[in-house]
Length: 114
Image (cartoon, rainbow, N blue to C red):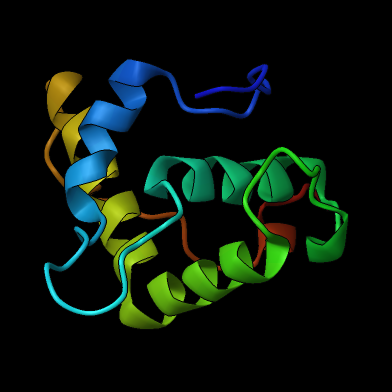
């Protein structure tokens, strides 16, 4: 990374964990010119800061490119897969079952005192 990191950037350890989920560059076709980690960092920046796509800082990849990958990964279910597997890994590391066995159901107002 040739820029000053933002607080939302992935650490090397975090990137090592999630990198395998993202598609690798293919040998045929146009050569990929954008670093996947930087695309993910840009998406995390937008998510945390709440800025509009076209206000993404200039040291990230082009906002249209970042938005393209975000939408492609969302539609393919990649973000859900990453989230689900990270939740399972964290739960297992805490000696819990992979999935919660009880969920809070119902309207929150039902639990308020009268």
